[in-house]
Image (cartoon, rainbow, N blue to C red; front, side):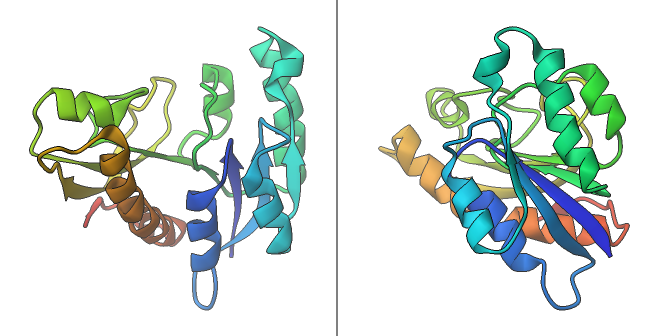
Length: 195
């Protein structure tokens, strides 16, 4: 059974989707939900589900990213995870942190990578006149939103869409795609999945 740690920054809807999927014959189980924001709503959801939680407020560290990551690592390594899932974790991790979990860390990003790494993905897709948008699960590497693609799901961009409209449709697919990719990944299958 693979031990799964999940990092969040907000409400944790993708974390909840992952946790709900890890039952029955799923090859993984959640062992920790950690956040860079002690007020993140997802921490309460994880506690309600009986999962250990940790919060390390990145603001207390100022520009000391290494110090923040060292404290975060202390909590993560205490649970000895096999896989680390970033689920709406809004901090860019240093190459040293990423290297520690190389080949064992996943992220979900709200665009069809390699299009639109970084922020404001939905607005950028609308402004570019794209006919479709979506989300990508990928392995995390030292380059932002650039690791091997493990899965993608697509949605149409509709006439008159706002960024929020598009984000809502993409989020529905995120909640389908991430659990499906994690199940395969935890079982050793890294073949990309396209929904």
